[in-house]
Image 1 (cartoon, rainbow over the protein chains, first blue to last red):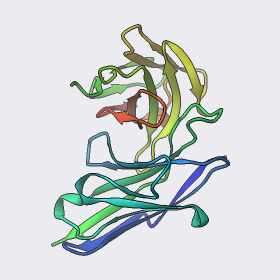
Image 2: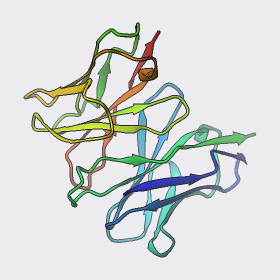
Image 3: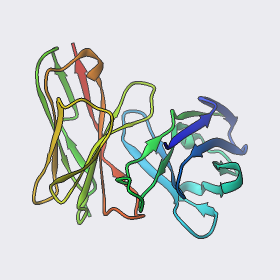
Length: 116
Length: 112
């Protein structure tokens, strides 16, 4: 069965510092992996996705993530945090292309706080 | 291009009542998925509709049902509301495949 674990429910960084949000997954077939961001009282916005090919994926707002099969990880990074990055971040896995419907399985989320 | 829209934005119901939530998919998207997000949790998959047919269901009881219309818009119906049904209900549309799912702003349901 698929599952997603986000290590750290709350991460706090200073403005300009490196952002690292951790995500580990389990999947019985090659996964599709996603990071979404959710601002207060809003829906989810897709930051980036990994399907096949290059394991380093670049997304919007300067975020990127690297798929590491050997570590079953898909950590999200940004070199320099901005105040506007403060939000809830969700990692998700999908098994599209298998017998699965392509539904997304989400982690519990990580709240990113950015201090001035 | 219009994104995913949902209505209403907020809704308050009492236990035992029934509710219908609506979703208009992004232009050209033929697949709609519904998720329930309880406070402080990640979204949980309810079900997915593809070309008006249910195409997978999560671990939700039958009192959660849905429809998809020929224009690919969708409804989520919940009967016999329970207090634990209080949550943000998210609709996401996609073309399937590897395109990813695009979410609407959600409907906040409160059951008293």
